[in-house]
Length: 239
Image (cartoon, rainbow, N blue to C red):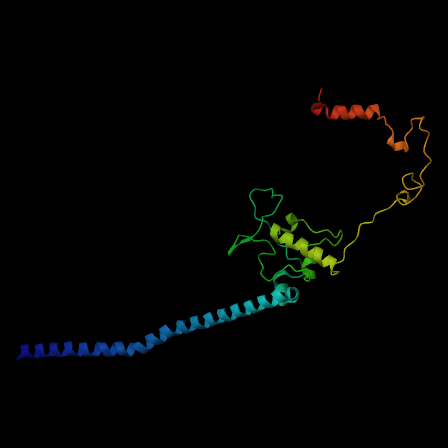
């Protein structure tokens, strides 16, 4: 009798364990579902924010492409560069302690951007254009009016060529001031007292042997000057 009771209790215990274990798993399912859905929702929100930022950046890029001078007046530009020029905090990346005499040819080859691109190539919103006067003025010396050398600004040769063309175009169109060098003209260049410009002198006598103009005659060079030239080019003169 005791053996049958013990067997019965074991059977009931096994049956209860097999029935209760699925119920416990079912009760845990909502909690697991909530835990799994929480990070998923966060990822969706982060992805949507990234998409909005990408759309805004694309719209701003298209707007600045049509009107590049508006970027220099935006808050984004002031936060990034402040009141200084775009090349103020740039440092060239080169081997050794002596920088090369020329900057790199270009920073962008196809869809590949080199490391440490130049101040113009690193910001896609900076567009070199003749009407973008504020950007062009940053690469012109306010004292001499000359364009800064690329070794000082760090701009690559491709962008430097675009800058030179845009500056020349802006000066031709009157958007950039420039100073014309002063040239002093002598009065002898415009006088008619010279024999080649004035009245023709009377012809000399044919028997005298003189030429019509004095500079057509034979000119004897200075012996000292000839000796200096011979000494300078001694290795190249034929004996």
